[in-house]
Amino acid sequence: MKKLSVKAPAKINLALDVLYKRSDGFHEVEMVMTNVDLADRLELSELRYDGIVLESTSGFVPDDKRNLAYQAAALLKERFSIKKGISIKIDKQIPVAAGLAGGSSDAAATLRGLNELWELGLSYDELAELGSQIGSDVAFCVYGGTAVARGRGEVITPIDAPPPCWVILAKPSIGVSTADVYKRLNTSKMVHPDIEGMVEAVESKDYDAICGKLGNVLEDVTLKLHPEVRQIKEKMEQLGADGVLMSGSGPTVFGLTRHESRMQRIYNGLRGFCDQVYAVRLLGEKNP
Image (cartoon, rainbow, N blue to C red; front, side):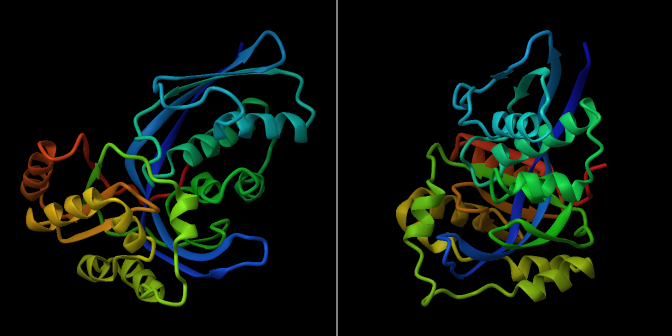
C-alpha cells in the first residue's frame, strides 16, 4: 500500500490587520505571514478499505471530523469520488490552539500529500481554493513561505522571504478562542499596523525595519483577556528580543533576534516562566 510523509510547518503573523466586518459575518483581514521551522509531521498511508482513520500524538487533538486534516481528506474524497481509504498519523510538534496555524497546516499538508498519493494532478492554486473551504489559514499553509493574505485570509500574494533570524516562541498554558477575540474587537478604535511598510521591509530584507513594523490588532483584546500573555511579552522585551509580537489571536508570543547567544538567553529566561518555549529559525521559503 502507498505511503507518504509530509511536513506541516507553523506560521507566525509579522503583521495582522482587521479592516471591517463583512456581510457574511467574517472579518476582512490583511496579514503578512511567514513559516517557522517548527513543524508537525504527517504520515499518510492507504488503507485496504474505504474510510478515514486519524491518529495524533497529542491528546488535545480530535481524531474525527472536527479535525481539519480529517476534513481535508473527506473533502478530496467527496470532490473526486475517491473510494480508497486513508490513514493519517500526525506527529504533533506545534502547540494546539496557539495562534500558529497548526491545525490549518495539518489540513494543507493532507491536501498536498493526498494530491500526490492519489495522483489528482491539482495545482497549489486549486488546493488552496479547496483549503479555503476548511479554514481561513489553510490556503496560506498550502503554499507556505511568506505572503500577504487578504479577504478572510484566503487571498494569497506571495512575497520574498525575510532575512534569516532566530524566532523564540512562548505559549502559556491557556487556550484562546479566535471567535471570542474577534467578537470583542472594536474596528473603529484600533491602531492599524503598516502592512505596506512591513511588505517593503521584508522584500528589502531590512531586519530592523521588520522589527519596527511588527503589529497585530488582535493583541490588545487577548492581552486584556489574558494578563499572562502580556507578562510573556514584557519578559521577552526585558530579555533583549529585537521585536516581540503575539501571533494570530494568541496566546503564543514570538520574539526575534539575529544572535544565537541572545536567543539562548531569551530561551533560558522564559523556560522557568512559561511551559512551552521553542527556539526555531524563520523558514520563509515556499513549500516544494
